[in-house]
Image 1 (tube, rainbow, N blue to C red):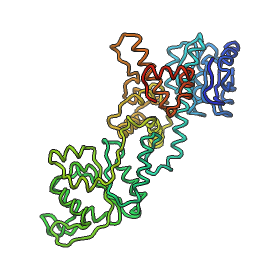
Image 2: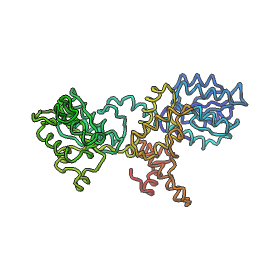
Image 3: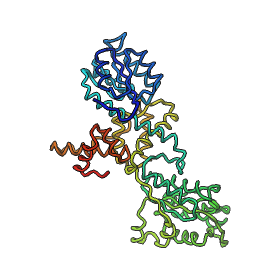
Image 4: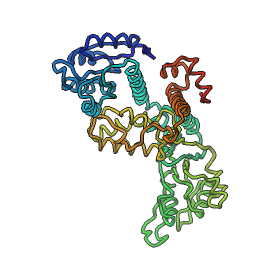
Length: 455
């Protein structure tokens, strides 16, 4: 018998067979169960209560042998409560209706006759996805409290980064932000600027890898009229423009060696000389650098000055890759979906269960930027009400080895993956994880020990 993992889990059973109604109500006795025999009574319940899960028979009166009433009921439920997970439980033209229902936003399809144990597993899994999405919505509602504008996160890894930003921002220390492309290094720099004494000044960002070497010096330091061909007027550089503000040098590892020496002098003396000029101009600026490269390796090969490295690296902040940010993928995906729903004037209700598991299994080599692009493309291209795994162009979330035929190995891989997934979604707490997995706490402890899982 299925036990509720939290109080007041709302389950609505829409079924015109009174015998099956009683059977399912008994089986889900620890859920807060409502029953309805037709579309109108089901819609009334959904309007009044925050229904998490609905099991829906497509053959409802006055069309018990067809599916028109059931599909209409599905559409109305999702229009009222887009976050509700609707599981179609029907025996009428199963395959054809499964396609219609899932493309219409249903979470899953289960063909009669009903085996309560199997249906119970589907309901539990649907509720797990529902609670994840609800928690993500709650976190999105309070994301303005994050110390970095634009950061959407709930993982302990990003919590640590945010706390570092709060501590470091008020100081005058030079900061080096490290991380792969797409991890949010500029957002981190903007967070440091916003919390610093320089917040009222300009935030000036320059990408050292995007500007040709022969132009980068004039961009940074400026030039006097007549300093070179085409210098028709005196032009201050980016460093001067950042006076009393923050200068963000992105892709610092690509800065040419000759400019590294000139930048080092500026960092030591806090004065600049424009190209073709002789006057030293004092500049008060907070300097933040970022790179995805290993500067220590570039020092060994002579491509980066060691004295400059220690000058810019008074404090180092590491931005974790998205694959290491526990729980942030779905949170970010939902945030991007809300954004692009508004931009594209769409009303997509969320992600299919296959899409959710695929996103959690994907390694995200392009990090947050890749996730954003995939969600945007999916919102533009999808024809359904939910984003599917095909819309995201991702592979299935099943990462088991297809070449392994040993049943014990396959079982242990599946158990290890399920336990690790459950633990990550409840903050490593064994009790709640055991409830999610449907096993006792002692059993879960035994499995954790047997499989060598770190809690």
